[in-house]
Length: 198
Image 1 (cartoon, one colour):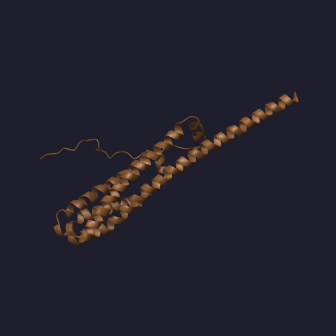
Image 2 (cartoon, rainbow, N blue to C red; image 1 turned 180 degrees about the vertical axis):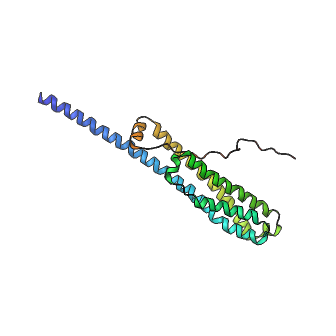
Image 3 (cartoon, rainbow, N blue to C red; image 1 turned 90 degrees about the vertical axis):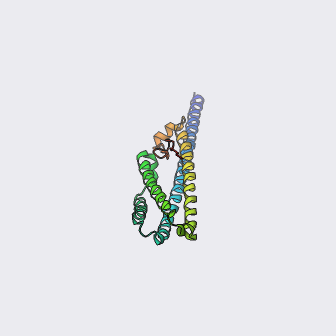
C-alpha cells in the first residue's frame, strides 16, 4: 500500500511539474510575442519621429520662397504640434480607439504636407533648390518607411493575436492579463476608387 501511495504521489507530482513547465513555456512565448509587438511599435514611432524632424527644415526652406503661403505653413506646423503633444503608449495597441485617434492625427499631417508640396509646384526656383529637393526626397522615403513599418507592426500584432487565441494559450493569456493588440487600418476613403478625368 505504501508503494502504491508513493507511486500515486510521484505521478501527481510529475503531472504538476509538467503542468507548471507547460504553463511557463506558454507564458514565456506570449511575453516574447508581446515584446515583438512592442518592438514593432517602437519602430513605427521611430519613422514617425523622423518625419516630424524633417518638417521644420522643409517648412523653413519653403518659407523663404513662399512667404505669402502662410496659412499652409501654419497648418503644417499646427498638425506637427498636435502630434508632438499626443502621447501614445504601449497600452494603446490594446485600445483600437486610441490607435485610430493617433492615426487620424498622422493623416492630418500627411494632408497638410501634401498641400505644402503642392505649393512647391508654383515656385520653379524652390523646385530647383537642392535643400528642398533633398528634404522632399527624404520625406518621400520616410513615408515609404512608415508604410513598411506599419505593415510589419500589423504582421507582428497578428502573430501575437493568433498565438493568444490558440488553446491552451488562451487560458494562460486570460489568466495572466494579456490583451489582443489593435491593427493599423486603411485610411477612410481608401476603398473609394479615385475618379480620373482627362
